[in-house]
Length: 294
Image 1 (cartoon, rainbow, N blue to C red):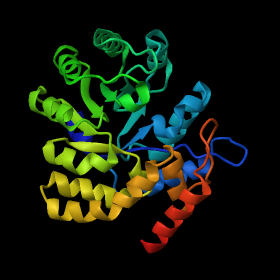
Image 2: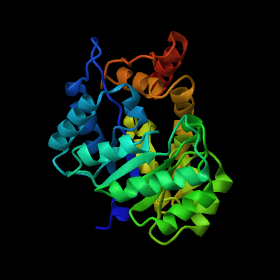
Image 3: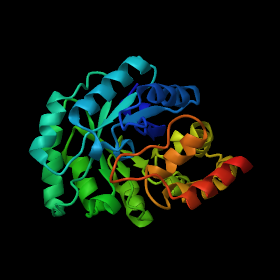
Image 4: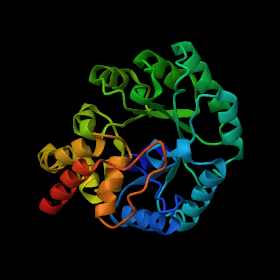
């Protein structure tokens, strides 16, 4: 199966559970992974921002990957998040992380440095040449401080062979539609905004890399599958039921929001690493009330 087909549907940006002493909670991670597989998500994205990678050591990242490979045992595809704002350091990680069992790399554009569009292009050109796996771009200007324009995305898509798609989280529907209209054949376009996923799928995106699907894998996955089958009546009904949950999930911080939902479900402890903290008591109570009604 072509990689573009493997990565249609719902990919989940998997959280990293922590124990009360702030260690990676592998027992809980195993529960989360089994929950996602049994609820039919199409693939997993490990070590994304939702996995709190800025506060994981390289040793912890490698350990999480090795644990995940063993646990999943090739039952569904795994994408690995390896991004950064130091191009040379990123190339080192691409060459030293265990990536044999990954199908692709998700790599956010450089944050904080605010490179020019040419700088973004050259960054991706260098890492694509060094990467042992195909790369999916990740445009998330709300976190990086710099939007990757449609023109830059399309230039990369046409000129850099080892880059196969993009996770678009700019929230700019006109930009998304321009990429969808002008992309080369087989260039995958995935939504990075849970709350916008339905209209973006209607515009032609092939799937979503989702935060919300950590907590609602079956419902969210069914919504995406309905969209991809052009059954927008079903998709709207599911999405309407999740809209308040999206709002609560992102009102203070990601992944504090989704971790609160998962803690109430009994999947993980409500633990984050500094500088992220758990949700305020008021929002946690709103989530608890929403969960009790659903």
